[in-house]
Length: 554
Ligand SMILES: [Zn+2]
Image 1 (cartoon, rainbow, N blue to C red):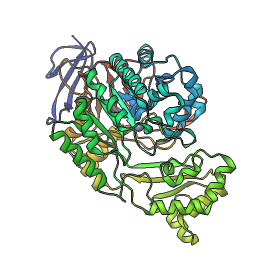
Image 2 (image 1 turned 60 degrees about the horizontal axis):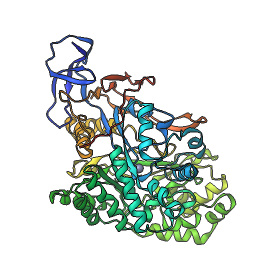
Image 3 (image 1 turned 180 degrees about the vertical axis):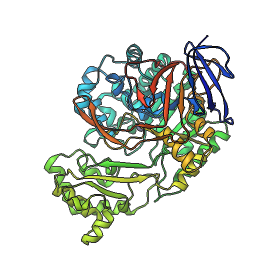
Image 4 (image 1 turned 90 degrees about the vertical axis):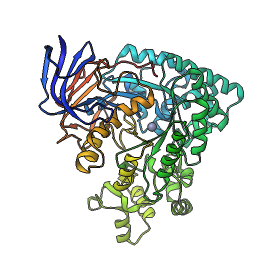
């Protein structure tokens, strides 16, 4: 007798096979039988033609902090995600000594857009080392399965202290970091993560520690994965990091390399395709390199209080870390503005904002007549330069004006080509971070609704594969991501005719009542994690924690 049988579903196996109709029987948390199931069951669900696929594996999240106060990892499970990989980009909260906690939280505030008050009142610091952090996650449990990277920036701060943001590491420090990577890998980390991206700055504009690493340090740490015999190297790549160097690391470590963050820029339209082609060619040479791309348009809400949009610009440096009147004085300075204009007029390999003023809109202003209009249009009307218009408006309104910028991935023809590229992997939800700027935790539902049903760019079975079997294979996640007897019963039952993510809405449920953006699922009927139903018709049952901490990878 099965615990559960789902009858008459359109089965998408996660490997990209043609969909077929059938039943799935679940016993003891695993898929027991697929096809025509004749055994009886404690619970039977008539799928009535709904689609059943493995649960979505979200390979790029930042739930490291949130999981310590919210084991439901809201909103991901309600959006079909049954496994989340945390600790991307090198931004983990372990290892961390008690004395360094404030520094780590301050850095996250800046780079991941989390409020310091939320982190201070929310994070439960029941750990110091990576193994202790993993044990804590296991003890507390979660709604979904979790796998965690060991993060370079936390590691560097732990070993080098304040010098982590100031200089390259000595041989002795590299050896110590290497030993910690190995310790974390033995304890069950899924790999090693880092960032060389100039958009990644900590408090006061100080670069995140990993950005100070030279190639020697990176090589030593990545190649330690070879000694571990498993693990993936992921990095968020700055424009100066060469794909050829990353291929070398893949060759020397004999481990897969996942390169983020591939987003299409209309001002430099070929850049992502050069990276994807380089990844494809490396893989053809036997060195596995994968391009982590987003299937969502990247728009960001921001105020000048925390303008992540501009913080990666070289010319923004004089403003970084300044506060109050000193900050406003920099924004007023004509020399500062001119150097920004000059930089924006120069093409760059990868840059969040490239002066597309028609893509920047006013969302909330004391002057209601400005709302929903673009800076390009408003500046034109006022006979002003767009940068001057935006900064002057913000300064007039004590920097409270809310803007939104549609920055990247707005060209759907190009994003469609990226999606079909053999070296790409759908990724970059950044769930758990940037909580007030944007929210792509529903990226999987967006892929199924927008890119499959609305645009027809991918087939349903291929989209399902890209959300499940493909990331499971890249990250060596065992017995998940495929509908197969013996595999864990992580399942998503949905309606292909309506599936989508809903619009973003603001809720005030972070520690201390702080706001974040969230979104609801459309067309999701059920989500099961290890055979336990956690979502019923779109509603997450917060009392259940069937997720496991994953520690064993291929
Ligand atoms: Zn990230």
